[in-house]
Image (cartoon, rainbow, N blue to C red; front, top):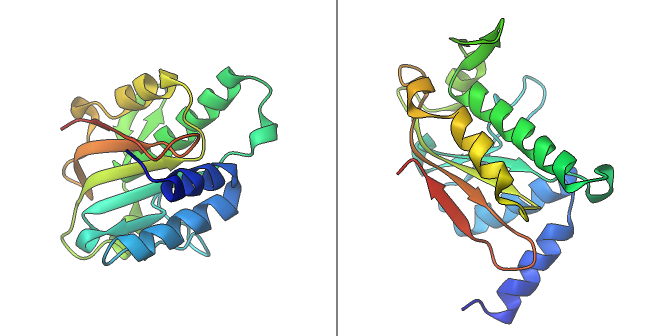
Amino acid sequence: MATSTTVEYAKSLALLEGGEFQVEVSTHLGTQVVGFQVVPSKPQGDAGLDGMSHGGERGYCCYGPEHDSFKTTKTLVNAIVKKFTSDLRRLFELDFEKKTLVRKTNKELSTILPSGCKLKQIYLVVNWFESHRVLGPIGRSVQPSRWSTSGHCNPRRTTATKSRRSTSRSIQRFS
């Protein structure tokens, strides 16, 4: 069972949006995960990766959508799915050409990850996770048959982390 301090922190984290959410998550991970490194998004871009740890084998993607920007749950779910599938496609070095998924080299990843290192776990961290409907579309976007294992990513699992109304929970897929 979570302590009241943990529950209060999760609630306050869920209230943050955009860059403030990402900064707080990065700060927290920096104090809790040995070797956590923020990946700056400027000036060249973050290659779909907001942070990494474990010598570059664990990646973190953050998204803190603005609470009042979405009129319905469906539009919020779609925004979360769109953001994370976009990040994951870049990390798996994939893109669409005429509705066909093709390999596309992500040149920035080689400047971010240590030489010869591949991401093995990717954590998706969001400030809102009240619908299971984000899981299926994100999961289908990274089916093993679509992975780019010859590039910089060879994940064993992708994790979505919840931070609203309760302590953070992980939903692990692709074990």
